[in-house]
Length: 162
Image (cartoon, rainbow, N blue to C red; front, side, top):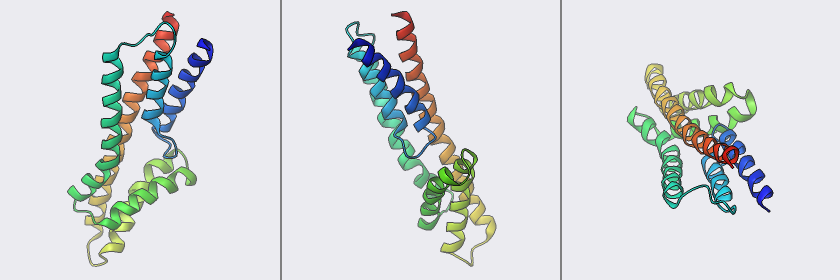
């Protein structure tokens, strides 16, 4: 059973890090599950403090990733169409031209969505909104990658030490 938990912990960690850039996988929570699985082994490598801190970070990063695009798009003057366009872009980018589609399509989606919302508005404004959406995507994805990568590091570190 120990070996099974260790293998599953590593797999959850690796798939979780991949899930940080693939919108179909819950990246950071999956990596945290890897930590939980490793903590269930007989040698209990992680303290309660470690698990609580990384659990809180997981929740914070997930919430930020969910709310950040809407907040940043609004902050840059974006409409609901720009927000929806950005989300459609994330999904389309996964299928269109990975991994570049995941970067470019949310930007294009927000740009096109903003242009559709107010056709009298300038392309310059739509570009500014798209930049805000893109910055939110980078911040959210970057935060998820950092947190998930650190948890995967600790999983592997503890397995090597054991």
